[in-house]
Image 1 (cartoon, one colour):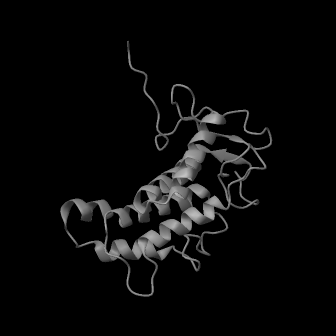
Image 2: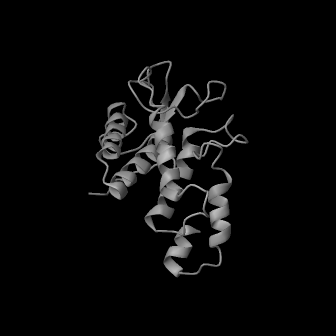
Image 3: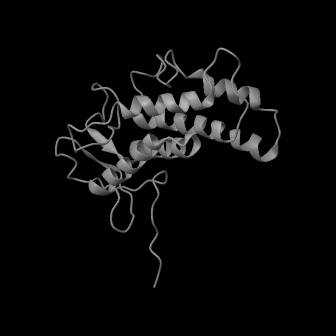
Length: 184
C-alpha cells in the first residue's frame, strides 16, 4: 500500500496503511507485540522492518504525534536483531526463531539473514551511517561463508545449529533470490 501511494499519489488508503503499520509495533516500538512475541521469528520481524523502511524512503506521511516514525521503527528492528547475532553457533547469523521454545530455534535460515541484510543496507544508504553498512557486509559474508549462498549465487534455505550449520538444507524459496542458469 505504501508503494501504491508512492506511485499513484492516491491518499485514499494512507490512513488504513498507517494503522496497519502501527498495529503491531509493540510496547518497545520494535515489532515485538505481546500477541505475537511468543511465536515470532526473526523473518517475521524483518518483514515489518522492510515495510517501514520503505515508508521512510518514500517519505510516506509519518504517524501522528506520540507515535514512532518510520525510520525509528526500522532502526528498532535492526537494533533488536543485531543484538541477537549468534556467534556461539555457526560463527554468526540469526536464528530463524527468536525464542528457545519455538520449533525452528535450532535453525538459521536465509530469509532471516536476508531481511536483516536488507534493513541494514537500506539504513546505511538512508542515514549514511557506516555501522549499518558494516552489518550488511558482515551478514553477506557470513551467508557466503556458511554456504547459504554458493559460488553460483544459489540461495539455500538454511542449516541447523547442532551440526554447526554444515548440513545445508538445499531448498530454494521464491522469497530468497534464486539464480537461474543461463544457457550457453
